[in-house]
Length: 469
Image 1 (tube, one colour):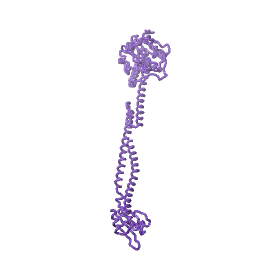
Image 2: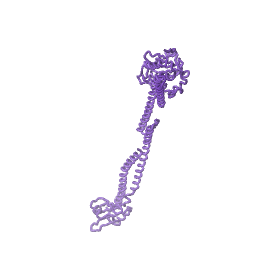
Image 3: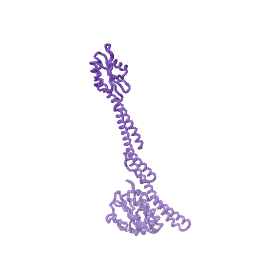
């Protein structure tokens, strides 16, 4: 592109210079010629008064000498009354040219050796026509023309070089951003997702850079969403895996039972590998779009119907409260089910058989609180458990389950807190905002707990004793 601009500028400027310089050079040459012949006409006109008075050779020679002509002047007087023709000075024009001027009665020029001659007719007192010949050398006709042409050529060359330099600078200004755009596209194609292009240069290239950066951001976001989806889907496999593990544990002894348990453990390891591989994805909001939502109580009843069967198999006591009437929340049904399965799956996975648990739903004026409590050993480090991609470090947990719940809550403007429960184990409190507004930060209690308000329905609910069925 840079050299193309230089070539175009060179061609256009050269055409303009030629279009103006050539006619101007011809005009300069004609002006020099006209100037030379105008001088010759003045010299011839200086002799005309004397010729109209006398034709005496001596007097005419003095008049010719007084004109100061150093280029050569001649006077041709025809014969009159039987006299002889008179010629003063050196004749350069041919007799035919002189005769033609006498016959036509007007001045003319003719080319002679070394230059040109001006033949000017002058009427004598006798009625005859004399011809004054003034020699104009070639050097006088072209005087200053060479210098003028050299100046024009220099100006033309300067214009061409200047236009080429300007075109080259403009080409650099255009090519450099375009080259950066190419390099950015190449880097992005090679997998360097952080490749971006500076928005500089002409308007079109700036717009192209903006579009490229936006496209790169979209690609990064799409890849992050894809990894996140893979991680979430893989984590949702934990629910049927938990059922398989529990069923495999009840198979008793024998080669088939051992093979089944080994296959389940292998499948769990593969799922964990997929989850850990997808941990590099950025968080993605779990809230549904505007106007979407679900009945939290219905989802809780549905999932508890599933998990209660497993609880009975393991001898776990459980309780569900607050799910007897509709509770609308701005969260997609599948997302809430996945979050609830993640919390209950953690209870079954990380607590011993026979450990009791409870699920409580509280519908407040501006938020809905989902409480999942258990009577297990508790979480020694809630902050580490909440860290994305890390579990407590003692049981091989990926930490994705709590992260799914956290994204769901934060997507509505809420949050998630982990603390001790009244059952003696862990309580996970999920705060879901109903209007999507950001809440003011709340003070933390001991080891990640949250100090609850002491007034209103929420305070009464949080202090209510929990009884297990």
